[in-house]
Image (tube, rainbow, N blue to C red; front, side, top):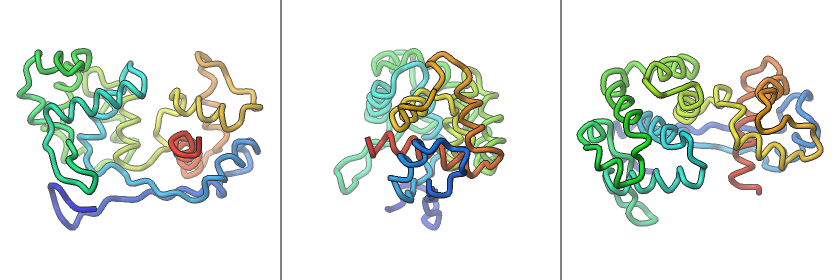
Length: 226
């Protein structure tokens, strides 16, 4: 890895997870599936603004469409750098977002996200130094103070940036989907049943590290093992 912008001595933080450390309260079928991953390491997002942008663009739309929106957004308005895989477009900075007209958002297909991206950019320019010093739970609270950033968006951004997936929105569709595929015999709540979140946190008990490992390992399984 190399630094594109910022302090050269600031290295990406890698978050390790080991599903073999999960407590016995996790159903055996789910534990076995997650343990097949072995220990994994995930780089936390080193740029808070990118984490916020990504979470915002995931609002309402499905994951595949969110990826397309993100790439189009970066390609149209973000800086381009050289990488081993060729040119890579970064997210447009908060300053850049504040200079865009309504037509720019419409042309890229992010008209729905315009007001929240602009509100987040304005708050980020004012508060980002303070935000970057917060722990994951305080960051979630701070981000929900931005208009149209609700608990789900704030929690997804905070988990991405801090690497702490104990604050991730645990009833997220991705968590539900992969958990059901890993352990199909388990009696999971229905898609619209709000009991999933409490069930998920109860599996980890009172240990935030266990909740982090359970959630991130399940998301990792969905990205790789499937």
